[in-house]
Image 1 (spheres, helix red, strand yellow):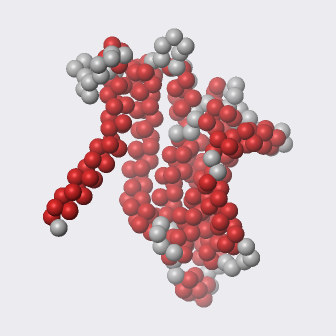
Image 2: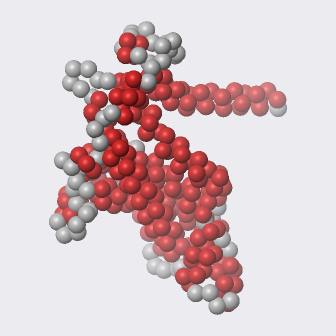
Image 3: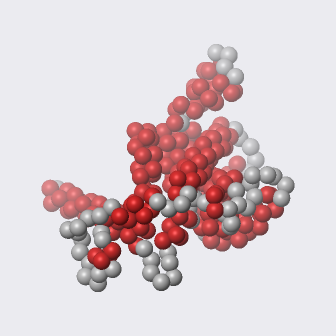
Length: 279
């Protein structure tokens, strides 16, 4: 028994090291001088750490605007996808209607379609929508918010469905007997109880929107003031020689908001991941 446990502990350590090593190498490359980064003999340490790469990143024109755009898009996607997924999960769990199972299967199928296969059709769809609805067309942050919300909804609905189903129907009935309206039951009873699930889905939605490069590159064509942080990395890709130190420094800075967001919701996240298996 002890041997088995030690083997499992050793395996867990190996998995943790394999997971953390790319992050460590990214931070290491960000503080290495250019000579060590381009050396053919790479070492997992540096004797001359430098913050020059971070200075080059922070002095990029409109870097603050790129950061603000990314934060705005990610937060809107988190709120919009969480709200829509919550309402959809309640409808699919608390109400009985025709083709309810079909709708759930369609949500699952949406997760199976590669993003690359839908990028071009979405491009023309967003272009046509922008011709009639201001603020959602090409070269707008609204297009990124709309597309990311649509892509995160299937996963969020499936996760939240388990949380809503775990709440007994008797709570709804008792509240209605006390005179509570459907709206009151929804926001005063169900919403607080499903909050752990919302925390779990919000992390997924935030990371998806924050790290996106494909959609930002596709829908933001010429409006440089509406580009997001992943697009800022293109500044350091040059035809003659890439600035890998600045690329790694920018990537390191991009992980900080994700960590902050994770720390804000981590208390509810563990409960959320545990409740996701309930039905």
